[in-house]
Image 1 (cartoon, rainbow, N blue to C red):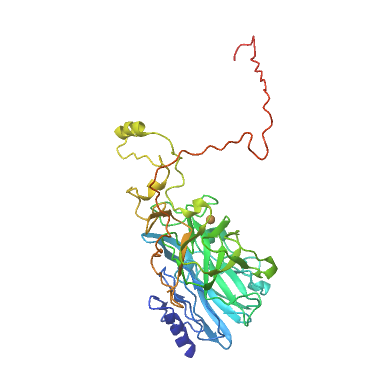
Image 2: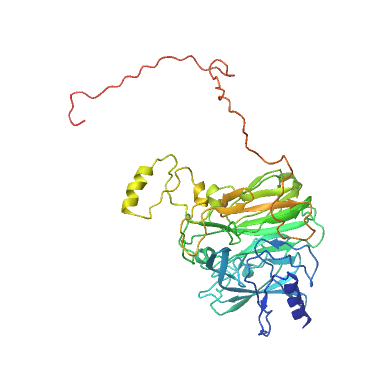
Length: 467
Ligand SMILES: [Cu+2]
């Protein structure tokens, strides 16, 4: 009974904003499934039972509460259809766990015996694979190979000891193409049981998954057959400007764990700081392999854990460096119109098609300001209103906000950075000099070879017809 109260209390501790709906029906031997539908970043779930650890923060997500049952940490995952708000004004019909896609983060401690009940409320069978874990083969979750698939309406039990500390993922290994395209995935953190020489203690520890969807503007359900041409590139099934910023205090030691369950790689780039890759899903990396980076590529099926000292105040962009991954639907199939003068043409076309509209004549930035009617359920291709205008971004984009006065343990956004006077790029208003021409000839470190005249003879076929 005590465990039930713990369960509710841990759910409640995650902040006033949490609307955890705990089922009133206590299933005989199962922990009550906890569900969460809000897309907000929840406060870290501070452990109230089991061994202590420093919890992570799931970007636009939450951590699954558990109960202790005779020394076993018990979780209840429910695989089910969910409605995920991917950005304000845009909802997607996905599949996920416990009310959300991605599913809740599972946090345990190295050496914990873990029992996970998985109830399948999907219209087809599923399974859960515990990506990266050491476990008995029959707990690996590959339907057909290591277990029978979990049929609709059935509940299966997985049980194993979390043997090594690190960052892992979970996802189905049954009709994978459909189920992962529909958003079934989640994060798993195994915290070290004692101080670990390769796992630093940090002030903030963020986690999120990279995912991608193909949802036609105006529709709600991803096209599961898409292999490469996705139109929504998301972090935890959110797209900018729907992705929360990562808010930290000046001089915090920060860790960010990023898992990739899309169909392509994502070079994740942080502005203003250098980080080290301190771990993969294989575990913490040896110190001798670490070097400073500002971008790290996260390949398909991989996790990368980065760490840095947040010692520069500001609003620092943090994003995938593939430029097509920082934009949303609506803009992927347009021809390049830069430099095409089509005013006259547009006039003629407008006579025939009154709504005709020309896009991209001066680049695509106009798209952010365009008051173009868009279908009901989608978001503009790139947007996000910053303090200096449109950020012209979408998809896999967020910000690291570093502030001197951010409170310890406070994850709320501090708003826009107030730049000290004289530290913002400004417009030059003096006269512009003629550009200096670079004189390549005679001055270069390697002078050019003397020009020799090359005579090109072009022979035209003669005396043949048909040319
Ligand atoms: Cu990307």
